[in-house]
Amino acid sequence: MKDIFARTVCRMLILCLAVFPSAGYAGMIDTNQVIVGAQARATLRDLVRRSDARSELERIGISPGAALARVDAMTDREVARVAGRIDSLPAGGASVWALVIGLLIIELIIYFWVN
Figure 1: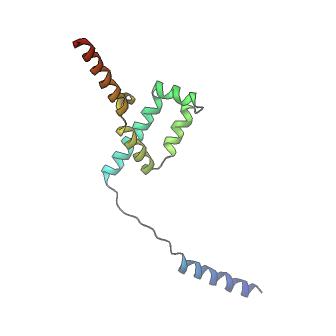
Figure 2: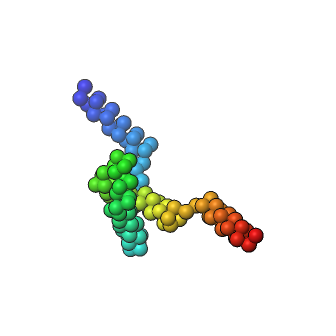
C-alpha cells in the first residue's frame, strides 16, 4: 500500500513539473532603476508627510502612519505609476475649465472697461 501511494505521488509530481514549468529570471538591474525607484518612493513619502496631505488623509479616515506603511508595501512598479501621476497633475489643482472661466472673466472685464 505504501509503495502504491509513493508511486502515485511521484507520478503526480512529475506530471505537475512537466505541465507547470517554473520560469525564473535572474539578471542584473541597472543602477538607474534602483535610484529612480528610491526617488519615487521618497517623493510619495514626502507627499504623505505634508501637513495638507496629512489633514486630508485624516479627514477620509486614514492615519498618516498607515499611509506611509502602504507606500512602503507598494511594489516599485506601483510606486513609479503613482509618482508619475502625481508629477503629471497640474500645480494648484487648476484645470482647463478654470482656465476657460478665468479668460472669460478677463474678457468681460476688458469689454466693460472699454465700453
